[in-house]
Length: 248
Image 1: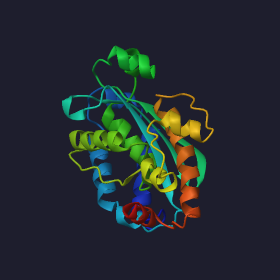
Image 2: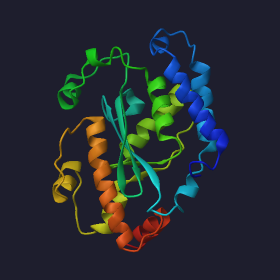
Image 3: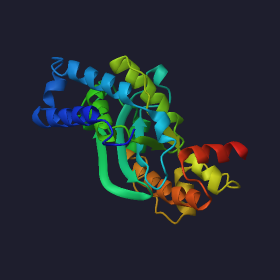
């Protein structure tokens, strides 16, 4: 489903944007539940309208993606680890746009010292941040129904699946494309894993690492470059990428 194909969905997104523009974020932190019903309605509507199978058929030159990254207190959401920040960048076709999203997340719990040293995020930084439910709704309002992209996406996918279910009792239905798919198509003989090394290979300064928006920006640059290279190899849609990868 491309933007503009469903007026009802677009109107709902605009309603949520207007709503958040008018309401003070403190309402969420007071535990009043004033916007709880709107949050749940938004998520139910979003998940209902998502049609991820259509995205695989969109031309790569036109596909609209949201490249995102999260920072967390650990690696295991089922063991209590939590999201502490979300960063995202919109990419249209092979063009990285200036449309960006970033939020810290109030976990109502301690951030391990080793995570603070890695990310620079400390407990005092998140005290006034939105709770996870609000942060997620704002992120999905930004992403709308675009295809999501992440570097080694299992981490992001696991936390998003857990968060959506715990916060809204809804499944996480967005398609998340892993940058590794493109790397394996374009650079099949490379065994590089880390984001820094992929950036180094492409002459991209790996600045602001382990910051959700910083990592999203780096991943967006890599995604745009390798998407163009995949097209040069004859891939027209995401489905072509999956099929080429299956033949490798």
